[in-house]
Image (cartoon, rainbow, N blue to C red; front, side, top):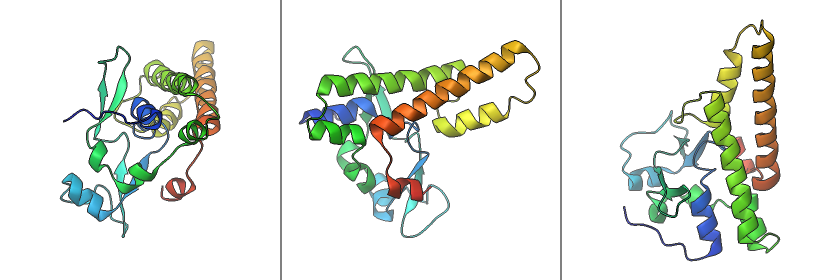
Length: 183
């Protein structure tokens, strides 16, 4: 895979973030049949819902690189990514574009969100290949009876951590109505 050299702070931030690709913001995205064909998919990714199909998150084309010391996202198909990915601009990217925030502040917010998501995955022993919010709901639902104080405390801490991450994601990254409606 050729490395993608970011042409702007917007592209650099997008490539450093990846929260929309790793299952932290979305469980799945709509992709056009032409996107699937271009990416080499022979069959629908999930049950067909013409005129688009759905690609589950975390995206199979998302990789990680640590060449800069910190882990960065690497989209293996960035130049040919699906149309919905190419057109998506989260609230953080919009605020950088409007110069309401500078790149350093945006990068710090990305690291904060990624760190919180990583903490939740690790503390709850969640699978890396599942959408974050689905995995959290399943884990908390599977806890069953919370008979002892330690279990109740861990459950409460996990709920608070999840609520704080969800609030941060909503406040900083915003939501895409079309993406939410497609779920």
